[in-house]
Amino acid sequence: MADKDFLLAIDGVRATYKHAITALHGVSLTVGHGEIVALLGANGAGKTTTLKGISNLLPAERGQITAGSIKFDGSDVSAISPADLVRSGLVQVLEGRHCFRSLTVEENLITGGIGRSAKRAEIADDLENIYAYFPRLKEKRRTLSGLTSGGEQQMTAIGRALMSRPRLLVLDEPSMGLAPLIVQDIFKTLRRLNRETGLAILVAEQNSTVALKYADRATILENGVAVLSGAADELRDNEDIKNFYLGQKTVSFAAPAPVRPAPAVAI
Image (cartoon, rainbow, N blue to C red; front, side, top):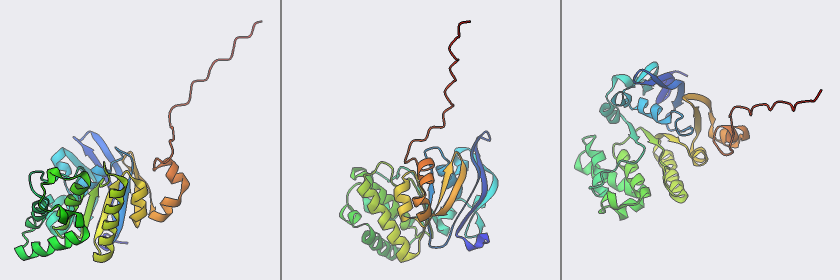
């Protein structure tokens, strides 16, 4: 299929930091219209670098794409500023949530609408939509974000991104530091959004169990290389993949133990 058939197309991307440290070695993946795609891998596998490349955020960290291409809706993202990518519908929720702690939950959400120059009536309508998907945020709408729980801050960050009316929502480790029940609730809401609105979602996760439960497809990164891609249900049921790539069993690749010399034989 051609790049234009996908909302996001990453093709053979190599990325470095400071022109010296290679973080990605020819990564390729796609996200189709209305798909949920999971990007899986351990810490340091290259997930965050991939996401920053998608949003053209690497130059701010002295990073650069040295080969390959990343196209959003057919356009090369390297030629588009991060702010313009947001306006065109590519919106990312960075790792760590990054709420404005001194603003209320609702004020945080409103900043997402202001970022796309929405009118007052549009912001009001969008707020009600967000509260329908995240009722907890409606309860906490007047609470300073800095005083809310980690789960509520993650919901706020996602809600703020949704106020920008994305076509592709990119999430970096949304489960990090959250209780399992909260993680399940967030992923259920993301899938509901996807099914009801057609929102495409790319989620980078270490928590492979929950990501593969809700994703349509997945790509697994290891040391900056895309080692496997396929349907989420097939990856979820593959024992070798669970054992070797998703960390469900400890696998040691340490060097073999030295061979002990044979005992001396008297002559």
